Length: 140
Image 1 (cartoon, rainbow, N blue to C red):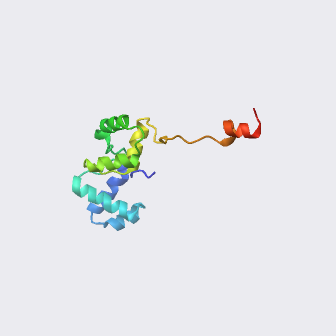
Image 2: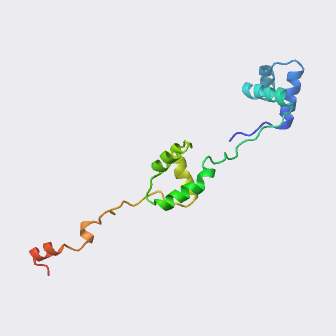
Image 3: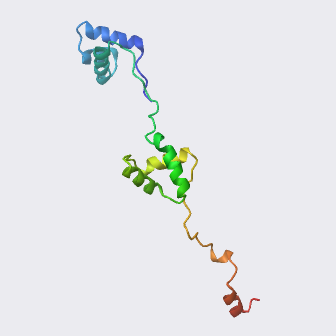
């Protein structure tokens, strides 16, 4: 990941530009990219500071305020899908993707794989033969 320029280098670039040098010429002189010099000067002119802005961090979760409602909804209908939850949220005014719902459920340790109502049948070789088939084959 990229790192911000050192404060000493930032101060020298700003001093050179304030002394009459162009941003592009200062960038060439101090061996930094032109865009770094231009953005540094934009920041300096706007705020008066040469300190770098915040890098990284986490965005607040969009669904944080809907967490309780989602957990209640899953309690009412455990086999609801993330797409259905996203649709219900959209009808309430919160438009998010099903992936956002899934990410919240994952953080809450909720399962996203739902069992079907009929449960899938096991493999044939694991089950005992049906009584009618056993009687016809004489496997009593």
